[in-house]
Length: 236
Image 1 (cartoon, rainbow, N blue to C red):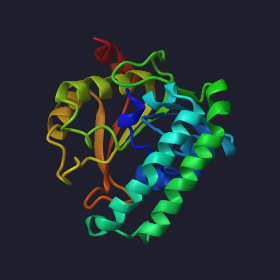
Image 2: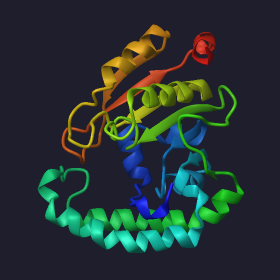
Image 3: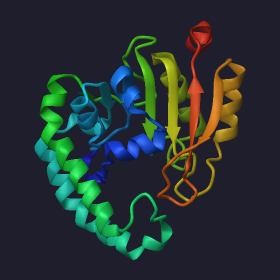
């Protein structure tokens, strides 16, 4: 990964709660992994609630100053693009472009300020799907926000299958992926094939309506529940 190819854009805890239907009890009692969290303040805010949270992302190989510099370089460009294309989004959870920009900049500021402590505490780890270093059954809840399915044009079906089965391997509870649409606001072409693979391996899957919609039509998540007796099938 080259940092000049990255456009940092961080979401906050409230958005994660609505996207993934997370209760305060979930945040405080479950061991959580966020895949591709980027510069979100999710990890920082869950830590403030005394939760057990780990985030992985390739951007975490860079320094605090490098990430901040990239945020400074791109935030005004992204803000301008949002103003020009605001009719492409649903202004329900977030009411205006100005509110959105404030949320994103605040989230990224909280992330940057927490980043060095979080790396030292191994809350921010430089790893990326589809291969992770964690042992089997390491987490109660594994989340993927705005990566899998969304970038279907950039990552093929096999990458999605390998990534999701890897998430299943390290989870002893549930995996949640949001959203299910691609960048063209269409249901990902890989969704049905992935559901077939998961159901064939014995996983319990459900598509759930969320409390969050910003990208038009992106208001559903995929829930995958893992039962330990099926772990052996995943590893094969």
